[in-house]
Image (cartoon, rainbow, N blue to C red; front, side):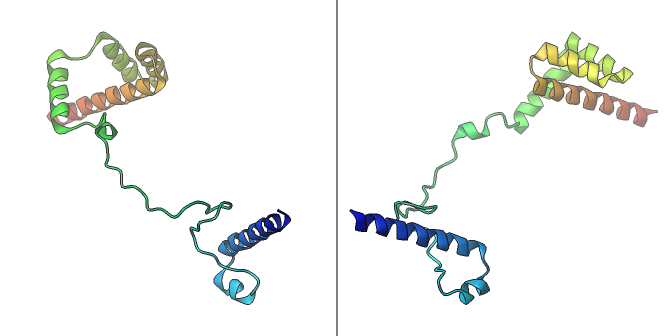
Length: 142
């Protein structure tokens, strides 16, 4: 039992030395004969690279990974709905706040209506982009 314990300690010391070599340059490893460079993955029970050598499993990308990604058709339908229905009353009020220059107040207002900070920021950005597009369209007509 003592012999196995000593062998385990020696293996750990050897592994520590081998991991130190990773941080040393190749020239310093050549200068020091006591350091041993080991393989990257080995079948040992202890250490950083412990475990059986295996090849990684190639997993197919599941459809849920593309959830929420805007495609052409959905964008087209949303643009048509926005054009026909217009903006909700809270969105109109937020746009008025943005026109006056009260961005922070608009964010607080929209955040309270939508229930989340990130959703509020996204909505504020969307409304300010719409206002900029309106200004740009006005500038080109005049």
